[in-house]
Every structure is written in C-alpha cells, then in structure tokens.
View 1 (tube, rainbow, N blue to C red):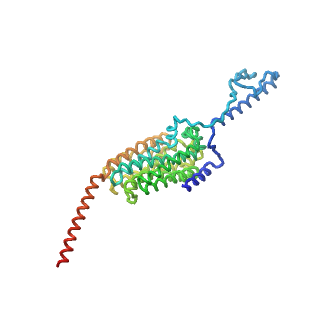
View 2 (cartoon, rainbow, N blue to C red):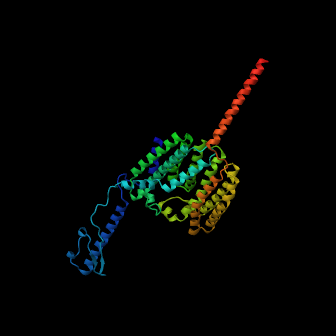
View 3 (tube, rainbow, N blue to C red):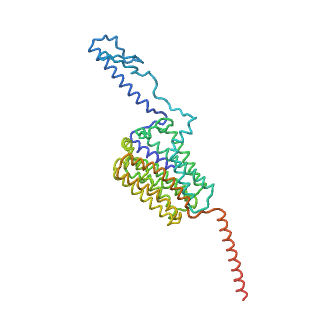
Length: 418
C-alpha cells in the first residue's frame, strides 16, 4: 500500500504540474470576483479623470475609489448612469464548511454513482454468466467490493483533475470543483472505500478477484488518468478498465479466468466502449481541447470515426463466438443480430456524416444497446447450475466410488484365496 500512496503522490504532481491546490481552503469564485472588482475600479477611475479633464469638474465632485460603495456613477459626456459597479467590502476567501446533511449526496457524486452502478451491474452479469453454482454471499460480497473500488478510482480521478474539470462544461459542477468537499476529504473517502473494497474481495470472495480489482484500480488512477493529457492511447487503456469488472464477476464465481468463455463478456464490454465514448466525445471536442485532453475526437477525428465503426463490427462478431465457446445457446446469436446490425448502422452513419446528430444518435442507442445485450446473454445462458444438481453430482460420485471400492476388495480377496 505504501507503493500505491507514493504512486498517487507522484502522479498528482505530474497531472497538476505547477498548479498547487490548497487542501483546506480554496475558492474559485473569489478570484473571478476580485478580478472583476479591479477592472471595474480601473474603469471608474479613468472615467472620473476623463470627465475632470474635459469638463473641468471640481475634484470634490468625484468620489475617491476607496470611498465608493453602492453609489451611482454618472458619465457626464453621455449622461449614462452606472449602478452598483463596486462591491461591498466583504471577505471573499472562506473556509469550506462540510454540510453533514448533504454528505451522502456528495459522496455519491464523488464516486460517480451512475458509472459505479454500471460497473457493478456488469460485474453481476459476469458472475451470473459463469458456469458455477450461484452463491448469494459471494455474489453480494463481489458486487459490494467492486462498487467500493470503483468509487475509489473515481474519487482519485476527480482529485487529480480539479483544475481541468473546472474548464469543462460537463464537469464544472463536480463536488471538488464547486468546493463542496476538500481534496483532503476526497482522499480520506478514497482510502476508506479502497481498503474496504480490497479487504472484502480478499476475505469474502477469493484472491484472484482481489488481484483483478487492485490491478484495475492502479490501471485507472495511475496510468489512464495521467495519460489522458499525453496520448490518445488513453481510450484503449480506459476500455481495458471497463472490461475487467465482468471478468471479476466470473472469477468470483469459479475462481478461474483461463477458459475462453470468461473473456466473451469482457470482450463485448471492451468493444462497446469505443462507439459509446467516441460518440460522446465528438460533441465535447471544445471542452476537451480547452482542458488539454488528448482525445481521438480532438487530435484525430478521422481515426475516431473509424475506430467506432471497427469495434462495433468486432462486437457483432463476438456475439457469434459466445455459443461457439458454450457460453450461450445459438438463440443469443440470433436474437442479438438485429440489435447489433442497427448499432453497426448508426456507427456507419457516424463514420460517413460525422456530425452532431449522428454522434448523438449513436451515443444514445449505446445506452440502450448494452443493457438489452446483457439481458439477452443471460437469458440464453447455456448451462445453469444450482445447489441441488451439484449435490446430486457429488452423491452419485460418492456412490460410484463406494461401488468401486467394494468391487476392488472382492477381486483382491478372491485372488489372494486362490
């Protein structure tokens, strides 16, 4: 864990460069208001001097800048009134006070609750799809542990990106940007949820699931997050992060990820993220460019459209591999075909037209496509295991072993007597 803490510190310095964030107090509104105040005072002062020079107005008529408070100012030349140009002397820099009544809401916002919910759902789907006996205790522990690790990753991600989130319309209202929570409180939240999630997966599920969860946490926070400002490869790394949760669900059920079937749902999730995110980022290019993020939609728009189309086609092919590896029956391949064909059609339109309308349609349909596809793959699962069948198999094996032992004893005794 010391390695993780030091890595977080190093990555934070890389991301923030020369920017220094205060852990206890900061106010984004204060700086803007102070700048506005200085500009207004300079304008008023120049206006007063101009009127004095041009119209020989007595100096007693002009109020000094230091004494101006909520006063009406008159431009003698144009006879235009300017009201309330000065702001009352008031302390702008204030300590952040934690509102305990909204603490749960702020924690949900810090964990990106909708994204975390999607991660948990894909983990559950991976568990149910695995060819093993359903155990409610392991299922719940895996879901909770994965959710806690996802919350940790999202909190650390927001901690790194406060100055950049403040420049984007989509992220400017996040809790750390708005000052509802301090960066120090975000780190405390991430530490508690991270330790709890790893401990839960390790003690109540298995080591393999805990290792996958820890690896995904490191991959998201220490590799993907800094790389967003370095290279467009961040999209591929981010897709790997999104593909690991269903693999964790599979591993928690059967404690194994060697079989090809374990990678079917992960592959589908990996491919799905390209049309989903590329369509989303297409209409956010000004925001990403302003914040300095290296996204395909900004640096290479043609590659962005091609990648969305290619991976949508790959997703369609993976759905036909599911029955080949005995993960589902062939009804899944049949029923998912219309869904995937329309998804592919929207990706092709986005590739050809490359406008806001086509990208918006592709993005919105991707939100429908994934849950429907998950339902189809679970409904058409090929082998369902339950505890009763498992017990019957064990009893039959015990009976067979007893018969074998009796037969062996009879043969041995007969041969010895002869």
